[in-house]
Amino acid sequence: MQIKYTQLDQDQFTQRTLGPKSGYRIETESILLEPLLLDRDAPKLWELVKDHSKLFEYMPHGPCNNYEDFYAIQKRFCSAPDHFNWAVYLLAGTKKQKVLCGSICLLDISLPFRRFEVGSIWFHPAVHSTFVMLETTYTLLRFSFEQLQAGRVQWKTHHQNIASQKSALKLGFDFDGVHRKHIIHYNGQWRNTYYYSMTDDDWFGNEVTTDGRPGLDVIKPTQEEVWRQESKGRRLRLEQLIQARKHEGKPLPESVQHGVALTALTA
Image (cartoon, rainbow, N blue to C red; front, top):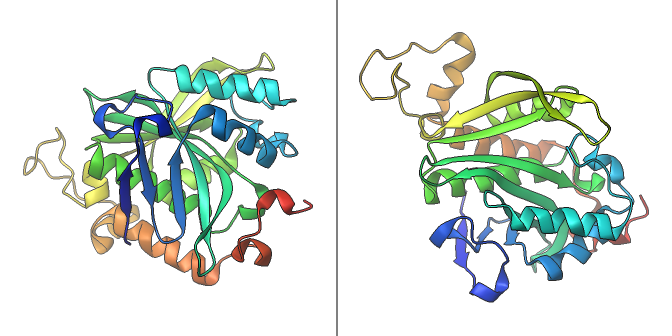
């Protein structure tokens, strides 16, 4: 799958948390990740999400009831020393018209240890169960492993968020375990956090060793892991999954395929 990286001018993005790799626009045939410029993008994202507050049900900050709350959360993200945010666009139709459809972030950024987290993901309900989540996450995983030289990318989720847990496994993350009573949510309830991860060995299809060095005590893959060798890395397996979803899965709304904004949809 082809991917294109474009370094934007300094005044076109807010955050600098990825060092010299900050401000990268990332583009595939169908998806565009645009680095967030807070005052330009926050109003657009709010218009997209304001009638769908349940999208934030499992996030620590919870649903947003008004633009001021939403903006405050986005501003806090943009001020965090270990976050980087992108607005997600579909590239629709033959003219590749940009259709805003959601947001995705890198969290828990540790450049010295080459560790990152894909998270704070949400999309307009009209694109749920299509290829959009898969290809968006794939795009950010490629950027993480191939541009940021990540050793580990993690995914974590609320213990009640079954859809997110299934998505992690579908994307190729391994389940690492549960951090019990990890976070107190906006509603005062404890959250047990499910942790998942993927390493550069997994992504590129290298042999996995017990101490991380090649050629030492190679672990024989279990039956459930045989697909790793067959696809020669999770990148290729995920590409195959995306193509299958595009051809056999739920289609995008016809109007969106022709470049109509998701905010124009009635539901």
